[in-house]
Amino acid sequence: MSDQNDKLKQLKTSSMDRRLSIAKASLLAGTRWAASNATSMFSSEEEKEKKRKKAMKDQAEYLVAEIGKLKGSIVKIGQMMALYGEHFLPEEITQALNTLNNQTVALAWPAIKVQLQDQLGSKLDDLVIDHEPLGTASLAQVHRAKRKSDGLELVLKIQYPGVADAIDSDMNLFKNMLKLTRMVPQTREFDQWFDEVREMMHREVNYKIEADTTRRFASRLKEDPRYIVPQIIDGYSTNQVLCMTFERGVPINSPVMLSLPQERRNALGEASLEIAVREIFEWGEMQTDPNFGNYLVRLGNGADVLDKIVLLDFGAIRQFDEHLLNVARNLITAGYNHSSDQMVKAMTGYEFFDGIPQSIKPDMAKVFLLATEAFSSNENNPNIPAGVMDEQNHYDWKKSQLHSRVMQQASKSMASRYFSVPPKEFMFISRKFIGAYTFMTVIEARTNVRRMIQKYQ
Image (tube, rainbow, N blue to C red; front, side, top):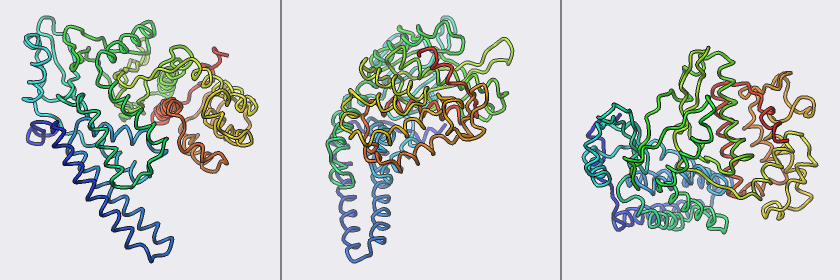
């Protein structure tokens, strides 16, 4: 953890301060961008493109550095745009925005203590709180605590003061910044995505929603020994403080994970993907943030104590209507059957698919069939690469290189322009599956995911 001198003593929550900072940075970046374009007027097309990419990279990095100084909701907006905006933001901008994940300077304890005193009042005296944060983010930081009366180990997710009130003004600042720099085309799709990010931001700072969702998922999984969901402690939870039990575990990308026997890694991989499958086929709502920081693994003993996945964060839950869920289920079923005809047939009754020419859909189906390759079998899918799936339908995620193959197929597809800005709902679903796929690739799992789809057929 950073030294106390590296911590912020307070946040810039004044809208005037933040507006001036962003306006100054945006105008300077826009001026530089215009100047770089002017100097390229007499260059060859190849040279112009090279200079354009270099200028955009430089300006994006400069803007992100300025955003990072402000912390709070504007940083979270940038992080969300990096996560979900790769289809409509230039690559140079998403790469720069991704660096915001590393800018997690903590708010100093005196400022956090004031927030806790304001939120908990005399209840604060019930707790012994570690002054060093367990983790920091753009909207909140997490501190370990212990209840004096019984020694119960807790964590407090403490929202930074003022960030919830600053969301709408920060969203406007961010959008104006992109307009001023003229680095992003202002389209209807971009506006829709921006509105969606705004809604996601407001949901994420609503700790009552997160508490209710955490309890809902805990109830669903309470009889399944493969999962742990923290218990919400209402007595120390408020609009801006979320208190829950402290749950131990190791990160997914910890080296110890790869030291586990193959069978244990396989079981963890199946448990990871089964959550995503049940969210679509049973629950109708999904945790859409695939960040590995939202999960831990509590290791068992390899005998009578199972390894368990600890589900930590339910702030990015997205609910879907039954119509959309049926479309998603039909697409997955088509992948299970590896049927191009079924996949094309599933692409109906939804605005995005209805706007695609019928002649293009078979080519788009090829991309979806590849993305659902692990749900098929060697018997119905002759295109599975040799050695990727065994006779028991265990799919070797690392060997498959599935994500890069899907990206290559999509870029070559006649339907590639329709992948440029897919419906936000499908982006959330695909992000969740990519997160689960990545989980299994990182721990080098070989899993029978076909079996978990079979029960819904």
